[in-house]
Image 1: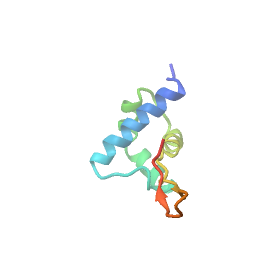
Image 2: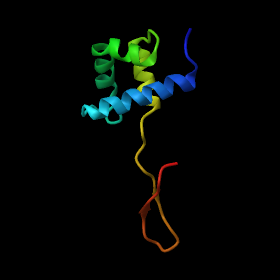
Image 3: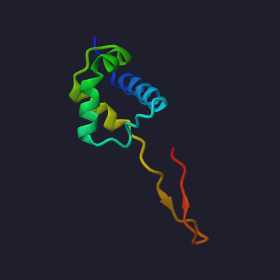
Image 4: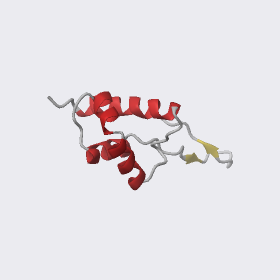
Amino acid sequence: MLPCDATRLSRMRACRSDLLVNDIALDSADHQALAELSRRHLDYFQLMLGYDAAPGELVSLAKRIRRRPAKLAKPRSGRVKVAEEP
C-alpha cells in the first residue's frame, strides 16, 4: 500500500538529511542531477521511503521538499534583513 502524501514527504526529508551528512545537497541539485542520483541510488530511496518508488517520483518528491532561500523583508527602519523561514 502506498503511504499518504505527508508520510512520503516526511520520509524524503529524512533522506535529504541523511544525504547532507554525506555532502550531497538535494536542495541545490538541478533536474538532471536529481534524476541521475535517483537512478543510481534507487534501492536506497525505496528502502527509506518504504515502497517501490519510481525514479521520476523521487525527483518530484525531492523538488517538493526543497528549502527555499530566506526571503528578504524590509523593516520600517529601511534596513533590509533576512526573514526567518516558517
